[in-house]
Image (cartoon, rainbow, N blue to C red; front, side, top):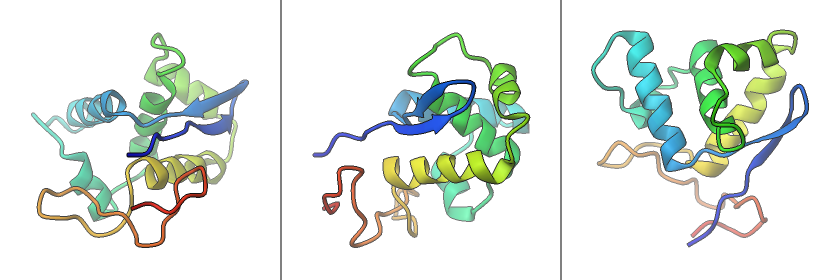
Length: 126
């Protein structure tokens, strides 16, 4: 088993994204709320490539909350408002790849890891 390392991001100050299970639950809850749905399966969202700016912002917000539980979605929006979307979205995408994995979903809907992908410590993922 490997431990995931936070992904650094420079916003108002150096921060880091950590997509833990509680963070992913927060993303699913917030996406469901935003979409007016009872439940959202985040792995299906990832597999479908259905990630727009709002979805990436929600993932960023949830991933930053390990450092500050009082962080709101609006405050997160304020943090990235003057930063080109491509800059912060690339960091969020990297966190998704390293913390969750990439590839086609398996039978459960969870994305599979790409063979040869490396953990943040440089070790190959098994």
